Length: 183
Image 1 (cartoon, rainbow, N blue to C red):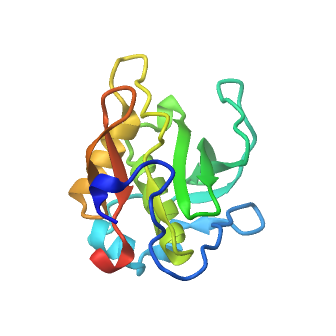
Image 2: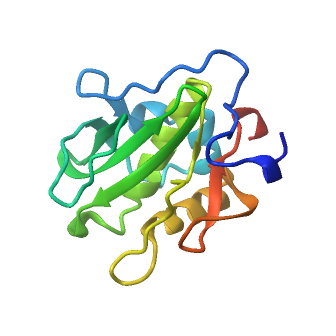
């Protein structure tokens, strides 16, 4: 399947093996410090400049929307809960992140990049690729899109790519993590 044929519902999984789900919870947290030798981190952050985060269970905040069949995951940095995201995983292998919230005082520390790298690494291990939210990368109150900045960073780091000819409802390009074998 060429990138031109990819739509939100038919992005292929990274491997032909059965597609497992990424499991992240307080019982099975994802600690990016333990992923430093993973191919995603070796490609994207060879000098270890992106901070470590731990991802675990989280509940909805008043600003969040509940979405069917999505897991709410907390973002922990330096022992403090600093944000959360929703992870959507379809049986087909289609996977995306949406509704990322990082507390204002924690912004600007590359915690979003660290979080996405951790989710991409875990998704690749499960035979999945991560794509940008098919509902669109929402603009912030300032008019920019923090998620767009993270995806642009992931492209620059060599672990994601723009899907040619596709845009979301806000005019942002669609993004997808590169398959593990493409790194």
